[in-house]
Image: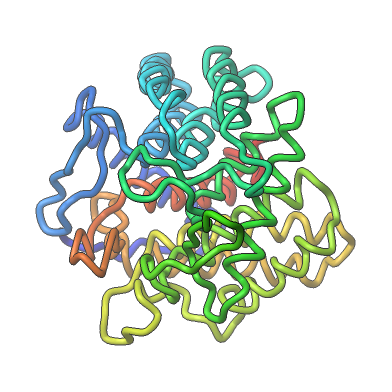
Length: 363
C-alpha cells in the first residue's frame, strides 16, 4: 500500500490527517459490511474480519462514532449505533477485554446528549464486569473466553475496564481501583514490566512467559489505565508513582517514538498501534498535570503526544489513511506490519483530541 507524506505544518494538519483516516473508515465500512475488521494487509489493504468482533470490536464501533461526530450525517450515526448494538454479545462473555470492547464501543457516544442505547449498554457492561470482580485476587480475571488459564492478570485487561467499572453502583469504583493497582503492582514488579501473571491456587502470582517482558503494548495499556485512574480517583500517590515510572520508560525525549514490537529484538518489527495508544495516554496525562498545577510537565507531555502523532502520520500513514506497521503478534508472526483496527482507533482519537472534536476524557 503506497505511503503518503501528509503535511504537518500549520494549525490544520491534524484536521487534514483526521479527514484522511475517517475516509479510510468509510471505505472499510463499505468493504466489511456487518462484520468487524481486525487487521488489513499492508500491500492490498484487504481486511481480515470477524463475525462478532473478538476483543477489538469496540474499536471499530468507536471509529464509526468518531466518523459520525465529525460528519454529523444521520446515516453515519445510524451505522455507529447499529455496530454498538451488535457488541451486546460480549456482556456475558468471560473476559477482562470486555473493557476494551464495551468501553471504547460506547464511550464516544454515551456522553450528555449522546446515544441513549450506547449509554445503557455501557451501564449494563459495568454491572456485568463488577459481577466478575474477584475481591480475593483484586482483579476481574482475564477469563476463559479465548481459551487458556482463566485466573490471569494481563496488562491488556486494564484499559477500558477501569473507567467502565466506575459506572457500576455498589462497589464499582472500589473494584476499578483494586483492578488497576493490582495490575500495576504485578507488572511493575519486574524491569522491564512483565505483562501477564497467573494466580496460584494457594495465593500469590507467577509471571507468564507470554506475552514476554518487552512486549510493545505493556507500558501503553498501563499508561492508559493510569491516566483514566487518576482522572477518576484524583491525586493518588500510588497511581502517580506508577505513572511516573511508566512515563520514564516511554514518554521521554530519549524514548523511541514508535516502540519495537518486542523490546529484546532490535531487528524486529515496530508497533505503531502501541505508539498511538501512548500518544493518547500522553495527551490525557498532560491534562492531569495541568490540573495538578504542573504546567511545565503538562506542556512536555502534550508535546510528546503531538510528536508521536506527527511521526505516525508522516512516516507510517498510507495514501488512503491507513496506519501501517502495526504488529499484532510478533512471536507468532501474525500481522506484523499491518494496519490494525485498534491502531487506527487510537490514532483517530489522538487526532480528534488535537482538533477539539473530542475531549481527552469522555466522562
